[in-house]
Length: 128
Image (cartoon, rainbow, N blue to C red; front, side):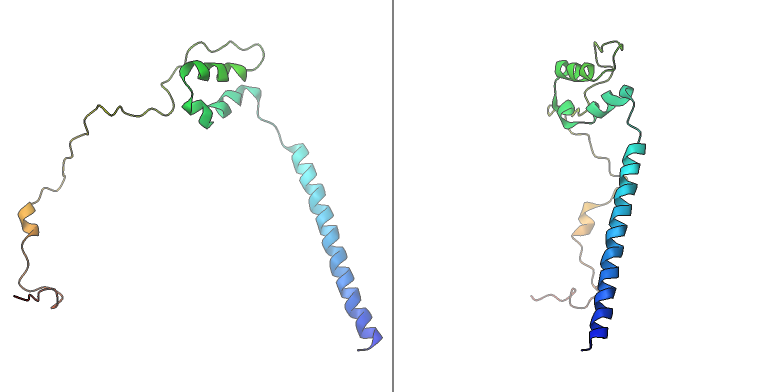
């Protein structure tokens, strides 16, 4: 291999590496500018973030009120009672299951009838 071919290959690698480094720096600067330009949520929306948390869903009403009042903005009235039922309400086990109404009533005995000629001849085959 000649020296000129080696230098040409080495130069391509150096240019490619340098280009990737410049690209990385540009992406870093763009990311920093994006982070600085991002607007934070208004403090009035903080209770919504708390209500979306799993700990809020699992807490009792007293704990929920405390969690909501903790993130309320300065000067806002404290929450004294929850306006809606708990987030993850479930039906009690004591309630009976709702009756199932079949929208397409059918004869259950029709399932037992085997057609004389089946689509697949092997399905109609009986060994007696």
